[in-house]
Amino acid sequence: MTEGMPAGRAPDLLAVSGLCKSYSGVPVLQDVGFTLRPGEAIALVGPNGAGKTTLLRCVAGIEEPDEGVVELEGRRFRETDPEARAAMACLLDDFDYFPDLSVADHLALYAWAHGVPDPERTVEDVLRELDLLPLADRLPITLSSGQRHRFGLASCLVRPRRILLLDEPEQRLDAEGRAWLVSRLGAELASGVAVLFASHDRELVDAVADRVIEVGS
Ligand SMILES: Nc1ncnc2c1ncn2[C@@H]1O[C@H](COP(=O)(O)OP(=O)(O)OP(=O)(O)O)[C@@H](O)[C@H]1O
Image (tube, rainbow, N blue to C red; front, side):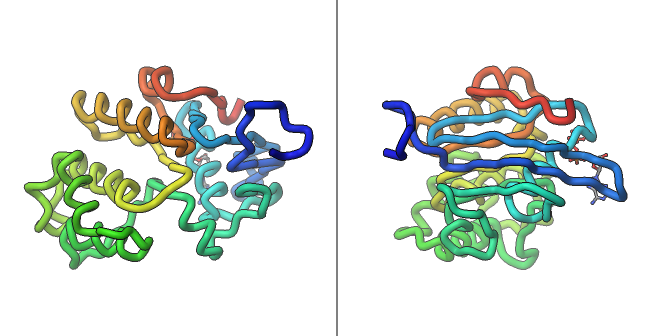
């Protein structure tokens, strides 16, 4: 246990401190800081343009903050560090895929690249869970926006993860999909995965988040 840590408190997985980010001189993030422990969920809330996505992108290392530090288990987080990359599964605005690989092939490649022992089995299980099995052989471009969003969520679930970073994971999901999301995120937390997510869905936030950060206030 870390010196000085209260008994029973898990050590921080992620520690964010002093994050500042401006675009063209206009401040978006000003001195943002928080910590996230295993099995804990933090929701980022706030109106359109508040800075939620910017904060997630800075934490994921996709965006360079003007100031501030992101640490994974006490070490500075670098996207180029394979260990750090292996820990963080992200679904951000700009989910990218290989346009000429089928849904299943894409996910299998992803699982294999992350060292999952039985990629095909893992992919099949996740496709089934997300109702994507009938679409396994389709190209991503042929999916509806909701199906493509499920595909993005699937890409986070076929790989190992200790932190899930999700930007509006509820978007484009139908009612059944939203109920699934609540229960899946609950299962992730129960297994010790930490979740940092931005959301406009109050029900999802209330059901999943241990703490809420109002971004931009
Ligand atoms: N690359 C960029 N260049 C310039 N301005 C940007 C850039 N990215 C974001 N912004 C601005 O930063 C502010 C925060 O944007 P951000 O996408 O982080 O907000 P958000 O809270 O995620 O919004 P939403 O709820 O609409 O998704 C907005 O004013 C946006 O216009």
